[in-house]
Length: 306
Image 1 (tube, one colour):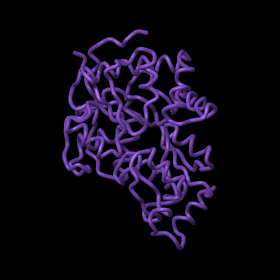
Image 2 (spheres, one colour):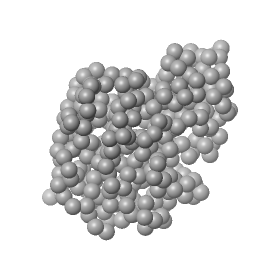
Image 3 (cartoon, helix red, strand yellow):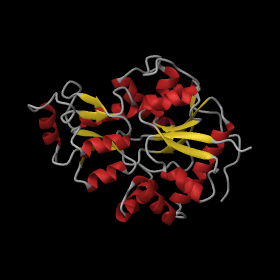
Image 4 (cartoon, one colour):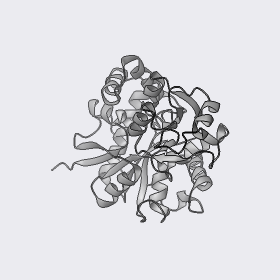
């Protein structure tokens, strides 16, 4: 009997949906939305989902840092790298067109209200929050110059930004393109090289390794220009993008600096950037995490052909 593999994701995965359309991803793989990184990892550790598409920082936190939001660690490991951020950047809400405008909004007379003059994060101690702190610092705003408000996953933060419930937030994976179309302004990107999304599991899991191989095959097809029509259709449907924006999303997936990781390798330099942000702004373990079981053992099966 085919096992259903449930994958928790912050935003709809165009990669996974494209893989299903191409016949590469097993029909038994089911994607479910998660509200936040603590909710995602609670579901993973409790067995409600079998895999997660998430930030590599979350894998570091829930494997090595006892002070993570759930207060427990587990044998969580990266099975495959998925993308390099998909445009992850700091966006200011429509009407704030510069770093100076944002600074004024964060320190203005209404600062301290319900959230409109704060920066939105998933949760304050998450990887995207650390990237946000670095982006704010790059435009001259240091911790203490602003307050944060926890808003949950990327779709929720996009809604809050466009609804005026935060002054700025980190967006990517199509949400950034929707924000720009609505008049939001990109103020700063993340440090590079960077790893934005990985596929992870709790302990070794052959089904997750099979999914990783299928996603790598899908990524190669996308980067090679073999699935343009499918990708734009899936991006338009899943991310609610108009045709022109869906075409821009396709090009983002193909971008070697910000797009898909076709070979699935979580390279040391990109992981070092992610870990460096955690060490700068939060709690982090010492030593070389690649020697401490962060990565799953090499894939035991061959990548699927097309």
